[in-house]
Image 1 (cartoon, one colour):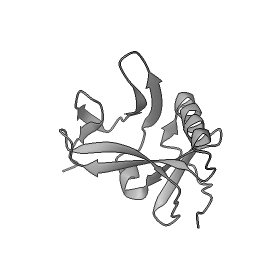
Image 2 (image 1 turned 90 degrees about the vertical axis):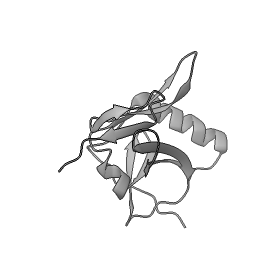
Image 3 (image 1 turned 45 degrees about the vertical axis):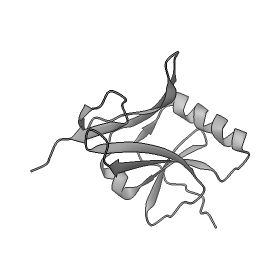
Length: 122
């Protein structure tokens, strides 16, 4: 059973283009419970990497949701710590199309934009 997430995170932003694309993807899949999940995983060429997936499961103890115009992006609380202040956007051009993260905590990233490093707080 899925819970309907109602929480919105003020320090993580979903752009209008990203919200519009989430709506398109969810409507194509014809599943009203479907959300886009953003995770930050260890690895990649810069230390951390972003991963976007479909998900129907929302766990209110572990997840938060960013909602804009009815579009839902789910993030686990551990990943959220590395995303505070970020904007999730969507862009299409002749070379590529996809979601991307404008993360003010990232001090470097790889050329593809899906891997990043953060400054140590030592």
